Image (cartoon, rainbow, N blue to C red):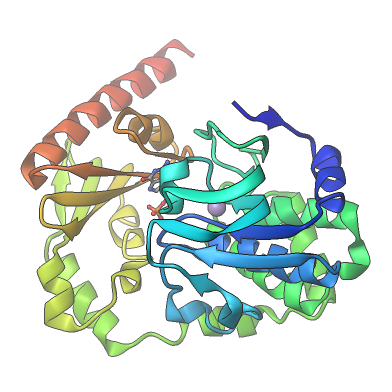
Length: 333
Ligand code: 5GP
Ligand code: MN
């Protein structure tokens, strides 16, 4: 187990970091993962530290506007050969979710906001209530050196907050989140520049993929669960990239009466990624945890091997129990 740190203790620890620092995040990086790791990379450079950012997986093209993105080393293999003095892991606590089997570093720190986090590093700061790793990172950076938060830091940090809060729409958005966003705007961030780059550069392939995926829309548990499926063959057929399915889960979730949306993505034959979204009744982090995954109350996921039918049945069984539990709680309150 890691030594848990406060924001102040984390700031002191980072201030004192000497030698070579590696920053990494989770595989299939999303906006918060890319934003937080690039934010820290640019910030630590500004402080004069020797820092590298390494990812297992390539960065989706819609993050290509972020400063420092061209400096990311995409390793591709499960092992990083170089040796580091410090390793900073953002937006994830589970070692296998970085995609790496090992990164050689003398000391390590996790900066994360997942409720299911069980960090393994020497040190960790985990705040499950905060919107994003980016918002948490901003607070720590401010304690270290507010002047070093320039545009190259503010832009990725703002971007991660936008993606993890559903553009300031999800329940993880707090007054503090808006306050941080305001401060980042004062550093020069233009909200529409971010939105335009993230969401208004779709390739037509994405819509072809959406068409196929929406055809799989099905319901379970008296229409309280809506689910969609992406088969590998859909990607081949449309020429879409896997990351272009980002956001598709908001369609099943948007249906009236649906409480939980599920997206089954075939990674390869017999291997699936399951994404879960809740409207609040069911805690999907706890459901995902039962299958070895994790996340947040309203957004979670896991990876699983097996036949789709069996994976679905096992999940719906767990979800049925969660619905029962939620209804029991409602009745007894
Ligand atoms: P998404 O469905 O967008 O991939 O992920 C939603 C949330 O669930 C994110 O906070 C993400 O970190 C978490 N999550 C998704 N897949 C996994 C997984 O395989 N393991 C864990 N621990 N968390 C996951
Ligand atoms: Mn996050």
